[in-house]
Length: 208
Length: 208
DNA sequence: GTCTATAGTGCGATAGAC
DNA sequence: GTCTATCGCACTATAGAC
Image (tube, rainbow over all chains, first blue to last red):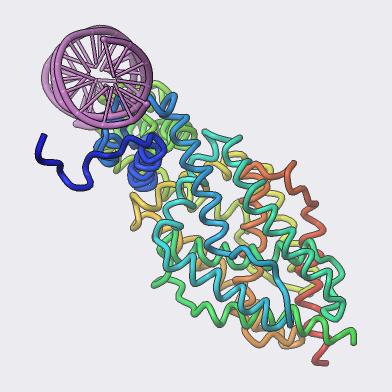
């Protein structure tokens, strides 16, 4: 045994294998959807045998669920960051919105994740709910608390306003990127954010 | 030769069959997604033979596209109606929003259509674009024109504001109904609409 | 009806860890 | 030597496109 192919073997650690399989599963599931991906292709994409895939995950459904839950954690951090909102509202809200839209737009993986998550929400309701609980709910709560903590914004219903804020951004992403509407209904994201902040801050002025 | 007008009967049967097949295709595609539905099941659901399906539609893809285009036309009319917006802004906007949310929420078929449309937007980009052009764009234009035609609302960017309006409603529908978030992040739709109109109308006041 | 693709299983062989 | 994880392959059975 004189020769060892570099980087090929030495993966005794089964955690690495799991990561490797999830990586391959991501490529396939995000591109082909649940029904459209075969476990054979997942195995090939992951660079392992099918038996190995089945030794780490019970079945196709189990693998899919593990993947979605991992992606949900990753994407939440990527798009809205981990640090709590703090500082001047006009600055903080514009910064958060700009950053979120930018991250979502430039991350093709995020588009694919939204497609799969929504597309399979009929087949996997409980999995979708896990994502709602783990991503959307915390996000809305953070926003709500921030809005409520700034009485100078004069927001009568912070919770509903948080929905408007998030909904505006996510729907924009869906129409422009996920649904390929960029060229059909073009609009600069700054313009949308300006209008959104305009509504929120002008609404505040009218009560001061 | 006297009793049956061959061409006529043939044609009527044909139209009838096409409708029948589309009906069966809808049941299957909306429930199982594109990759998940088999042409066998479509034929059974439609109550025709597989050969009949293939005599009216070139292949699975052609049938799917025909179905989506038909649904896009139907759903647009159902949810936002066909009559142009007219009247007192506070009334008209509240009425439109309430009606749209109500229609979307109570129509399980609409949920399924959104899932399929977004879920398959990676595989069928041009089909998705047809829907953007045929549903979202007209909707945004109608809203934009209405907002622009009411200077008392003092909206600086009607186009962007139309996006906020539509995005708020559609995203709400997605989180509550499509993604089964009703029980996790509950909210009455009236509360959301109130907050949305509050933003728009208070913003107007601040400049009067 | 035909032909292909796919989910999932079982087994013999291998390679490294201890 | 023994244990565990992996591989590759052959296999069954099913389903689906056309």
